[in-house]
Image 1 (tube, rainbow over the protein chains, first blue to last red):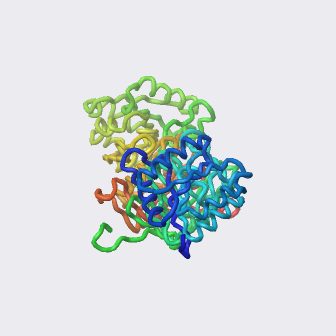
Image 2: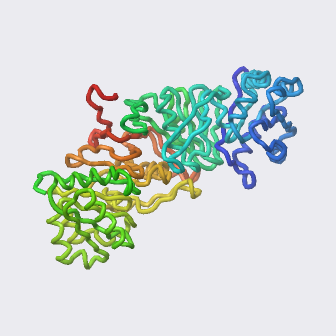
Image 3: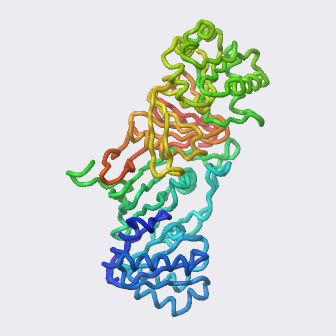
Length: 275
Length: 275
């Protein structure tokens, strides 16, 4: 909490293990413990704040946290109240539960509570989020989208997230809900940002003020980078509702590998390990 | 049938429209009519040869074909018999139905019938195939594969197809069955080939002896090119069962666009059209 650079982020693709080895949550809690202080659980996204918040509190205590505080903000009015905004400065980490990311942006966005969170994070507070709590992390957020598995056409609507990551759009439950097409579509619309698709029970651990991330958990993370696109046609409705896009750079990254978010490339492991 | 270069290929991602405008089948039949002669329908892949073959015969006649011949080969013995092998030379086009691609390779592969088809194709006979009939077209064929939508882990088994396209692996029902991950996995295992994922009711029309293809139909075609991969780790079982792969080049191509299979890049449309 006394760092001069912003805190680590744990951006979890949803459905993280809560009964087995708890790998993803365990790494988060260890990082939070090292940061010294209380873990807050923000339940704004869910319609079941007591149940969902209570489950995470129990898990975090089981994993060694000494103090967990549930933060039940469900209106913008509460997000202005001292009893909530003053909690933030005592937190070493804030965990944002799943639910609906539109609730997070509409209830929390721009409030005094949000500004306190932003300030605390800039001073080293860790922020974790799963599912909707993952989607909200970036400046650009997918608020709704259809896939071709269930629908005829892809459709993606982009909204404004909390902005802890710039120039990134997150998609969660990525492989499990077949979201490759919709993330590619989002990048076709916004080639200057990178798409980060995070599988369930998998997370990116963003370190060093956002310079790079490491993948943790069971599955993999897909990065779609449109910065070197040679061509994109998303507007030519006459020919097809489908997008044509050429020269996308793509990376699929499993546990133990790191990705440089500034250079937009995989960080090679040191010699002696797999290369 | 008198061409000096091999015939066009129509590689259809399955579930092509049979009741509406029949766009994909219609383009195939027009090409076959221009090629002058009978359209053969090879029903080997399906367990319902009469029903499936009969439906395509009716559709092709409705679309203007003057003569359609069903080729019901369901054993390797039949694939050696004159009554089947001699049919081939009279065909302007051969349509391979869906079903199980393992039946196609195990019953047809290497037989006299196959050699006749190969020879006729090299002399200009058009070959079309949908679903299993699409998968069989390339030298490398996905014979089974699991996706993360339904399973914990991706698993891909590659077999030997008919080889009308070299250095390519086809995946069909691509977006509709969420097969991005498994095609990427196949390319991680075999970076020298390109993966071509074809959506349902969509096809690639391969022209000019395989030099390029044009996309036709409702959805899009995804090309995964691993030739400039900067890194792949598929073997490091200790860390993760998931593959790590960096620097894949990816293209998503809709109707009306063409892709150069030799240069592995989108062919830009002429000036005056969308670029």
